[in-house]
Image 1: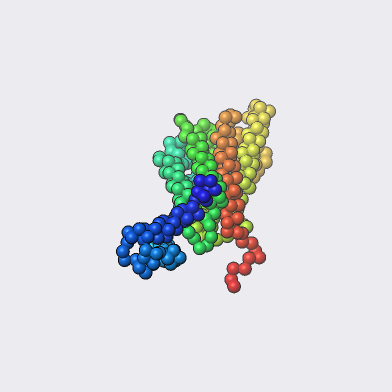
Image 2: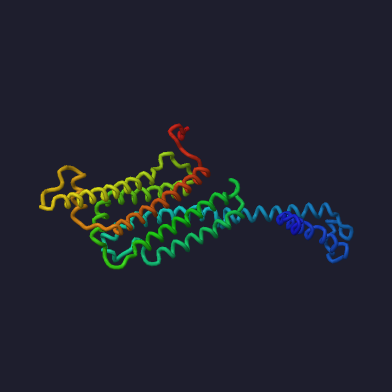
Amino acid sequence: MILQHGRVPFGRTTLLAYNVSTLYAYSLTQKVEDDDDDEGGTNPLIWEIATHRAIAVMAGILWGLFVCRVVWPISARKKFKEGISVLYLQMGLIWKRGPLAILLRSDCTRSYLKSGEQAALQRYASRLETLRDSAIHEFELRGPFPYDATGRVMACTRRLLDAFYAMSLVTQRRGHLTDGERALLLFTAQERALLCDRICHVFQALASSIMLEYPLSDAIPSVSGTRDKLLGKIFQFRKDHAAALAAKEADKNGEATGKSNGRGYKSGSLAGQVVVEERDYALLYAYALVTGQVAEELKVVEKEIEGLFGVLDEESLLLQ
């Protein structure tokens, strides 16, 4: 049964029943025990023996459940739920520091990931994998542990941690920012701050839903839209810089080149004040690529959580 059919639990149950009933009845016939006349003595009553052993085993199971759930509750499912919620909260706070903003504040002397933080996050994720493997074997009245869904969530979490590390490698630069990179970071500061806040918000929403086991709202903000605004801002800087260079070439006598007022004029003036090379855009484009990957993984996690707990919309009735 165990080897050929692969039914390990059923095979173990059969062996246990054989050991506690048939072998015991055989020992009675061999006069191994002298004080078991209540179960037939040398003429054992197999059904009575089996009934007694079944009652004893079930009582042991019930006692074990009581100890594990009341006296000494150690639930891998609960620890996994709390652990992944804390991990998402921590990841949101780390990203909120601003992978590129910290380059301006520290003049490239610091990274947004502190020393040893990446290794600690990876160790924590490995611990969550261990808890997830243990949770599938736990008895729970609410139903089986969603092993496959949580596995996909953990796979996305691993890829998110890889994206965090990739962004850390990009920002670990030698020397100082060039004038072009500094101008680009200053020009896109507002959009990047909004994007960091949006990613942190999504992490917190996912963590809250997992912790409370409550449905997500269908109004979770989109990270992709904010990222598109950042890309548009970079394109605007490139366009203004090209226009400023063309105006300088056309006006070699030093006449005023910016004739429009408002935001476009200011960005054009900023772009024309510094020399920007093509490689200066690499830092922001790498940031945009990583945030795009983060946005996609967060969408996958959001879909998995919606599959587990559902979605709240404007028609949902919560007060009944």
